Image (cartoon, rainbow, N blue to C red; front, side):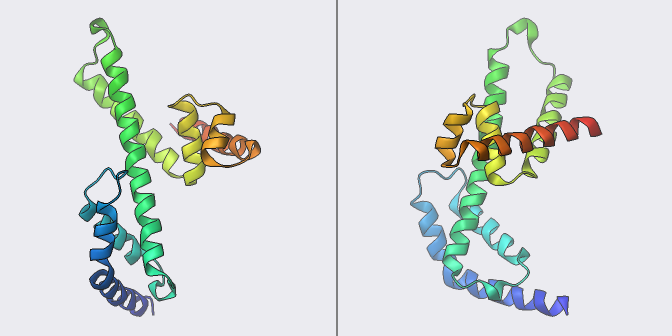
Length: 171
């Protein structure tokens, strides 16, 4: 039965692609906050749609595609901020502390592990944690930025620190 649903999903996604990919590409092209080529994001959106258990249950395909596209863009921007922060930290190091290729690999692997740990958090918890730890924002500033309560920010921060601590204990 799962193969039938998967086949139905494939056909539905093909129809959605033909009917809506030009619109989605155009919409993404007009956005100034994207960090990838619109065509790449469109591809990722339709791959995400393929992973849904029942595409036929989607009542508003354009709204769903827009939401998925925004999530993809958010994740790409988060990774880009992480990369820039790392590169800025390296650039700020005195020459005597210059990082060897081996040390750089270890640092990149550590950052990738942190990224994988944080990817398991909800988008809001991850954002709150990164705003605090990378951007140095206070809980009050984070609450305002995310339009949530202070107790929600505290909950998000606890989730972030717990995830990082658990990952550290597994190592």
